[in-house]
Length: 232
Image (cartoon, rainbow, N blue to C red; front, side, top):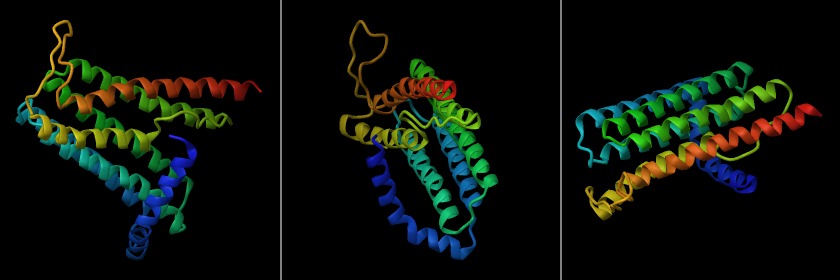
């Protein structure tokens, strides 16, 4: 996603949410409260994944859909808290740190739920890619933070947190659509493959595979970029 498109998208979202944010300011809601709400929503999404793993059939994709919707709303909290801090003149160094720490907890907890769900329903390879995506997601953020702590700007690459949340939540929602269109038990099987080539859950798991690759590439790009800056 180019910087221009990203800024355009953010401006559009902010214009939609500004009236709501102004209401939060009047009600005395702080950015930290919104950040905590985002964490709680990601915990709820993980509970939904775990419940779906334990109670639902393998072909019941409704829990993936509900978890995806919850993750999407939690991601919106991450946009609102920063905007709330700016519009309400509540920005602080500790607030920025608090937001970053809870964002990392939110993401790791979310991936815990995804991995649990996939393992429980025998999507072992997909669960492995989800774990690799978790590693990449953490390292994308850590590499930038560590580099900037040493005085090097390292915001290069794609798959930052907003993009990751959008990909996971939207793919989860589209899984429900695929299940309705094709049927929950629909499969395309190729004899030489150890897994089905396509089934509704693939709409959710394939983007996770893309995340596993792209997040780690971004982390390495940031590391190499930081080396160039620091060597100067």
